[in-house]
Length: 501
Ligand code: HEM
Image 1 (cartoon, helix red, strand yellow):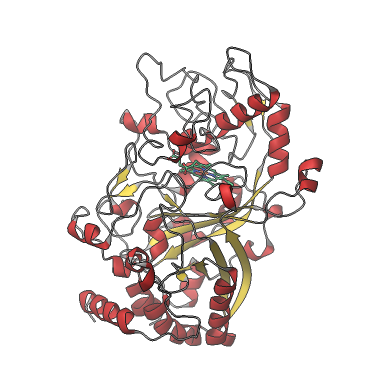
Image 2 (cartoon, rainbow, N blue to C red):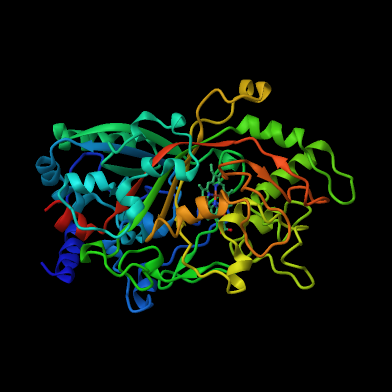
C-alpha cells in the first residue's frame, strides 16, 4: 500500500475505530494528558491546521504518522514505561499489526481536542535487539544504537554496578510508553497488552513516573523547573523568543536536515529515543549546597541564600526556571514561567568578554554545557546537537526522615527521554563531549571542569563561585545512572508495514 493511501486509511480507521476495552473510551470532559502549556514556562503547541499550512523544509510533516512523544516534548501526569523482551516474534507481530494501527498515539491525536483523545497515550520503540528479533535487519545508520547502551556505558562514564540488572546486556527488545492522568489507567493499558501478547513477550522492567505535586508540577526532584527549553522544528509551530529552530531532520530520520543519507526508507519520520534512569540524591544535594554556600560580591547573603545561589549557578537557572544569564542575583518567577521570556538569552552581553566573564553564568552550568547558546550564536557550532527532551520524574517526594538525615532512603530521579535523528549528535554529544569534558565550552580562558549536575568522570568544576571563578569544587555525584537503552521510535506506518510484517 502506498504511504498516502495507508495514511488516509489509518486516519479513517482512527476516526471510526471502536474501543477494544471498556475503559478505552473517549472522555468529553477529561483530557488524557496534561499537554503543554499546562505546566509553568512551556509554550503552546501548534494546531494541526497550523502545521499543515506551514512547510518543513521540503516536507509537510504527516502528523498522523509520527509517534506523539517525539515532537510534543510533553510531560505526562503519569507515565508507565514497560520494557519488554520478545519471546515469539511471529505471535508478537500478529498482535502488533492491529495494535499499532489502532492504539499508537500520533502527534495529530495529541493535538486534537480533549474529547477526541483516548484515555491513555501509547508510544512504542524498539532496541536493536528487538529489531533483530522481529527480522528488521536493515542498517539504520546509527552505530551506537546498533551496539546498545550497555556497551556504551563505560564511554558515558557510567558505573554499571549501579545499573538495574534489566538494562545490563541486550535483553530489552522494546519499550511501551503509556501516559495518562491516573496510574490505574496506565496499569490497565499494560494489563491489556499482557492479555493480548500473552507468552509472546515478557515484561522485564517497569518504571512509573509522574509529575510532581502542587507547586512542584513541572519541576524535577532537585526543585528546578524542567522541560522549558526544547528546540522548535521548522514547520511545527512558531519559535518563541530565543528558542532554537532546527530542521525536522535533526529529530526525524530521513527528513530535511538528517545528516545521515543512507537509511532505509521505512525509517522516515522515526526518531532515536535515548532512555536513561537517572537516580537523584536530593537530600545530599541540599546538604552539599548548604555546606558549600557561596557569597555574592556584596557579601550579604545568608547561608540559605548562598546555597540557593550556588544551586542556580550549577544549573544556570533558578528553581523558578529564570535563567541566571538574565537575572544573576535573584530568582524572578515571572521570568522563569513566561515562555516569551525564559529562553530569550544567549550569554552574550555588550562589554562582556565571552572568554572570561562568568559573573552571570558559569561556563560549566548544566544548561550552558548542554546548550552552549553563545557558541551557536557566534557561528562556532551548528544546530546538529539539539534534541527533544520528554522525561518525567519518578519516585516519591523527599520525606522528613530523609531531609533530617540528609540521606536518600527511597529511589527517585528522572526518567530521562530524549529524541534525535543521530544519537552521537544529540544525547551523546551533550553527555560525553560536553558535560563530561572539563574543557568544554571551547574558546574560554578560564578553567571550566565538568557539568556539576550530570558530568561523569573526575567531578571537578570551576566557575561556581561568583567572586573567584578559578576556585575549584569537588562536587559529589548527585545524579547516578541506573542504566538505560537506545531505542528507535518508528513511524506508525513502519510499525505496521515493516516491524509487524
Ligand atoms: C537527573 C538529571 C537531570 C536533571 C535534574 C536535569 C535538569 C535540567 C534542568 C532543570 C534544566 C533547565 C530547564 C530546561 O531548560 O528545560 C535542564 C536543561 C537541559 N538539560 Fe538537563 N537534567 C538532567 C539530565 C540531563 C541529561 C542526561 C542531558 C543530556 C545528556 C540533559 C540535557 C539538557 C539540555 C539539552 C537542556 C536544555 C538547555 C538549554 O536549552 O538551555 N539533561 N536540565
